[in-house]
Length: 216
Image (tube, rainbow, N blue to C red):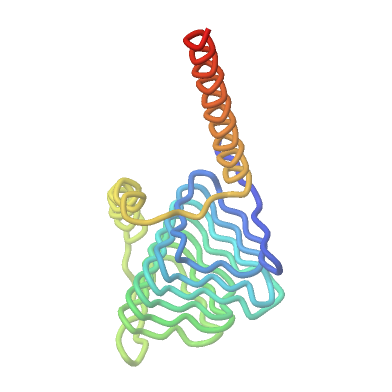
């Protein structure tokens, strides 16, 4: 079973599940929780400016995504969402499950996005809008439509996408570690250094003994 541990650094307090993948270059500020299997790319910003941000399981947050909570209530991101490059969520109430927020879209204050929805490229979801299940907002004028079956289709796309990222990201980026993992790694390194020092000392003693025998 995956475990989550806390990392503190001054005013920052974030919790990353042990099976999540958060690139070191991502910025997490304030009370941020990242769920199991979620992947967060470099240059993302999650800023719990006022209230907490809670990200669920198996989400993908691509480069330059910004999620900012400007209200005391928790801003929740559900499961299996794809938030594409440069998308921004500022002051929204919630994003449900199996949604796609496309490149450079903007989600405004008080917005609720239910399940299986799509926000199109560079589209704006105006303040206070509630997107019902499998609805779409697209175009410069924020036109709306319905897309039956979108949630299932989004989930199918997500599964393969996550498999690829989990294989490739650790090869090209350092990942943020939980405090517990960092402590265990530091202890292991300390043990290894201690063993190396002991071995060097034993080698010196053996060398000294041989020199004494030859001198005698």
